[in-house]
Each structure stands twice: as structure tokens, then as C-alpha cells.
Length: 258
Image (cartoon, rainbow, N blue to C red; front, side, top):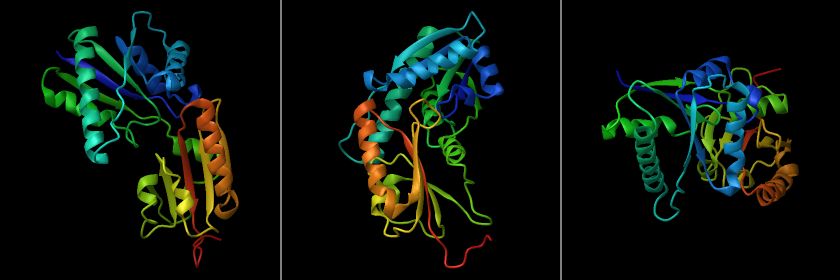
């Protein structure tokens, strides 16, 4: 019998976002692995530990930290990401062999939802492909930052009968996606909203969603873009990091909802 790896979505940051299924998964685990990303992002590891303290009732579960390497900034973006994923997979492989035995259950706590702009599933696939660790895999969904954003802004994600595209700031900065008027942007390190020509578009922005650090802004893009940019800079300066998500909604010549 092989090990089992649980990839557990723990929500966008509010400890109350965690689902009953995720709580049960935590308590099935013999080992929980918590990533650390340096002093600046210790808040993220502390939030994971807080979730464990709140919901972990299995006294036999062992908790281990591991350091996440930094992604190299030189070369192409895709090559840098691929190299980074393989480096993390190697860490997983060595750590799993070191801290667990056959038939044990290993839990990986993933911010938000493992299926949306997170690479844990892909990284675990690399571990499987390396062939040194045999395991079964289970994935537990979690509340996303998109859901947390819409809840905080008190808006519906989609307009009636209209699609929504989810993309990155890097792609939005290259141009508005074709065929949609509603775009959700994640992983925006370039402040792509500043490049949008339609200043009458509505933007709904939030950072550190679900956490005690949460801040949100919304309004006509031409009116709030500079405020959002300044707020981002101040938050990054204060906290050393930032995670933000936003929805930009263009007006249509003929609205489909009344």
C-alpha cells in the first residue's frame, strides 16, 4: 500500500473559509507540510498554523515546515516557472521520504483553491513522474480569492448571460481579451489596470482578501486607478508582500441585463 497525498484548499485567508471536507482531511493526515517563504511572508505560514490550531484534533498528526525556493527572475518566464516547479518537487520528494512512511497520509495546505492559479497539482505530478515516491492523490477544493472578492464587494461575478475571463496581469497588459467584457485578474505584478484605455470601466479590487489585512476599493477606473496603485504600494511597503485580485467590467453598447 502506498502513501496518500492530500492537496487541501484552505481558502483565501479567513480561517472560517475552510470547509468541513478540508477539516476532515487535515485530521486524516499523519503529516502536514507547511511552506515558509522567508520573513516577509511569514504571515502566510502563520495563517496555516492558525488553521491547524483551530481545526486539528488528531493529536498524532505531525507538522513539518519546509522552505520554498525563490523563482529565478532571469531568462524566460516559462522556463523560470518550470525550473521552480521542479525544484519544489525535489523538496517534496526528499521531505516525504524523510518524514513519512509507506501507508501514511501527507497533507499539503494550499492557499485558496488548488485548481485555480496554483501549481501544487502540477508539482506533485512531477514528484510522481520522478518515480521515487508512490502515492495516491486526493484534491480538496477551497474558497478562492475571486469568491472572497465578490463577497466583500457585494457583487455577482458574472452579468446575466455573459462570460467572465480569468487571466493574469501580464496577459491583460498585452491587451483586453477578445469576446468578453468582464475580466478577473490575478497575479498582477505590473498593475495592468493602469494600461486599460476604457477609463469608464468599473473596477472591483481587493488585497489580502479574507485576512485581517484585507483592503478593497471600487469605482470608475479613471477615478480610482491611482488610488489603487498608491494603496498597493503602501501595502507592499508595510507588509513586505501583496496578493490582490480584481474584476474589471466594461460597459456594453447594449446591456443584456435590465
